[in-house]
Length: 155
Image (tube, rainbow, N blue to C red; front, side, top):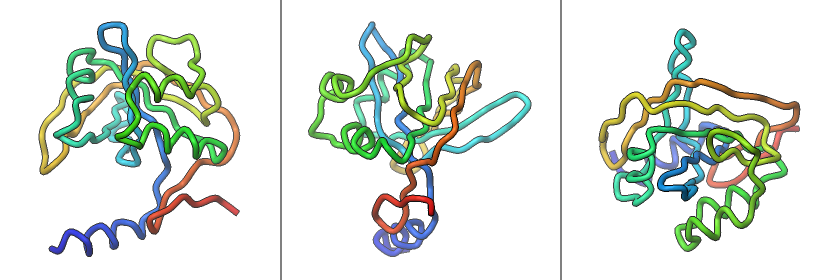
């Protein structure tokens, strides 16, 4: 299938936006992703995907921990900051306030899931990470959504 057609078709599916983070060698790492899904309730397992060529893979594979930060509709700037390859990890984390937690959790989101990476494998041009969730929290609000090549809002 043509790559542009595939992207356009998948773009019809609305997804939430997350920033997925870890800490490795006492440095925080993170990236914006809409490639996140729950896999299992018992035990609680999720998956997320990261481009194979990303240097951030080393941090996730080295730390074996993750935090999935579910962004609110007020966090478009956070999404853009963590999505830009022009921004270093230092610049990305200068723009947010972190909660005191066992992993880098960004303040102001709708919720977060923290856990341990239990498996990862290269599939196509991405690495798929599977993680078992060990803690989490949620708050009320509306999610930041993405569809048709741009941000969307409920309502």
